[in-house]
Image (cartoon, rainbow, N blue to C red; front, top):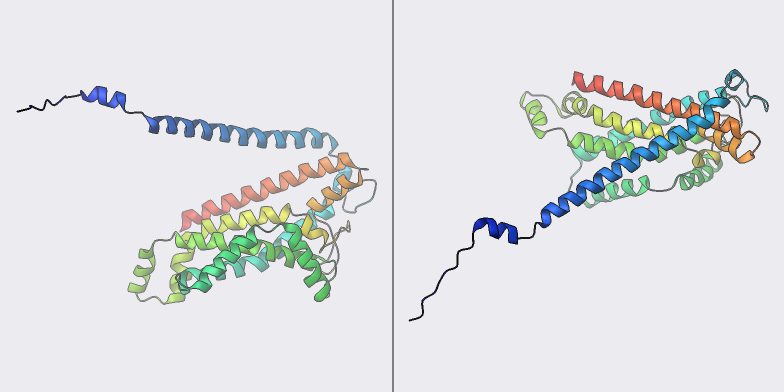
Length: 292
């Protein structure tokens, strides 16, 4: 009768014989993550440094005159137009985006094909180039609606452009609120609307504000869509008049080739303006988050 002899391999030798692929993959991912972070930070610092080095020496008091002339290339009208354009666009897009997100999260059936189609459409619209929005604004708002080249035409175009962004970020923020909040509110006898706006929306407000901050950054830095809708007139414009924002002002100066130094100075002003807006919005979001 043949006897079977069991060969016992020590546990340490078994572990050594097994390839440690997960360790290699983890190390590789760690290296790629660190490299990506370093490259991103280096690129950001390079862009900021390049703008500051070329723009700060060209800053002067004439650059901030109230009235624009071909000599001073003042940015003050563009700054005012940028603020007005941003406020008008957000006043139009924020309520629609927030209410749309509330409907999709709190009222709509998630298994419905229509709801799925709405989400896919919003995600698709978020990736459309801004030049397409500019052509749409030119054909619809400026021509069909007879608004011409005006601030209101540009604001409506930008509102349509950032609406999907605000809607999707607000929707994800509302989804992050635990269902127990809603159940507790319903258990205390609160109605649907009171539960949504008193219980669900406040905890989600930091996420909603994050979407509004991203939308603000896109509005402030937009150029292509405004060239076809708001125009390039260098003055403090009314809502029915043509006017240029800071980004458009910088683009026009750089393409003309006559005031490249002023274009770099405008880039510094735009950079500072975006930083201030993001900082103020971040502080506001933290205060809202502490009060929830």
